[in-house]
Image 1: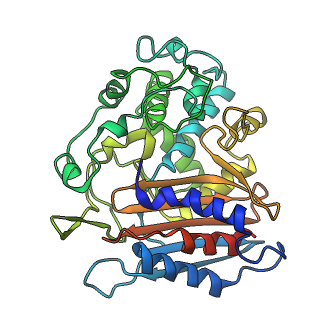
Image 2 (image 1 turned 60 degrees about the vertical axis):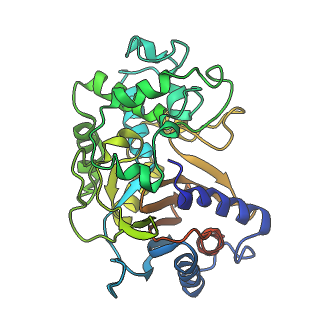
Length: 363
């Protein structure tokens, strides 16, 4: 969603891949928690008000944090506080579409036109949506996500069809299936697809198929609720040189692309269940992480990287105003990270701190 903090997560992974990261010589060693803490402190010093983390390594799990929950207060970031997880929502939505595919209710190779006639270009398939190979213009690029602009729309309700219409008012950026380009519109369409096939609101379908079975009691797709209910940190940005608390806003503008509220504990539970095959049938589990020549680093709703120490990691990052998040796992579940930062007014680069954290856990 174009938020600066999460854009640097991919940079951090690339830095590990090119520089070797931290402690690459011994991939079986326990995580050096001091190095992790140094990384968290570095993120806070450069680009965030506070950050919370949950990490797992070979069955050992721990939490850590740095910084504050609110400006001008000494209250620390809650270790299991709730936060807006942004585009991590895409992993949940993709999971539901793949479940429906496993039940024979949707064909990944079929044109979206089969299920949602007249909505988007007839060449775009369901797979194109989930893998970001549709060519659809990203509607977020036309919305005012600068601080002053977003203040004017932060409490507005958006219908999914409005967001799609912004995209389809522009020509396709390339012929479907020929290139990869991240577009949030893909997952708005995927959400509409889920609603059409199931006949139920997206929020209820995700709750029934993913949240309740995994007992993710602190995770919700909030709809028009602009509050985060329960303990949480606050995010800020500057308008006219003054700090503005951006924690509350109507998340319908992000809907199926990125409106989920969760915790590091729930995200860790979810990504572990997804990686273990608990949520998908074998054929769809293979599709989840299947990359192509066109999309070498992105499966169906998950980003996939191989680090030079031999560690494969997959998951997703996510960013909305005031919040940047990340969840990653190794395919064997041995090493996992769930992280959230409540952003401050700074424009610094969190990449060095993130590089230190991810290198310590995964390599």
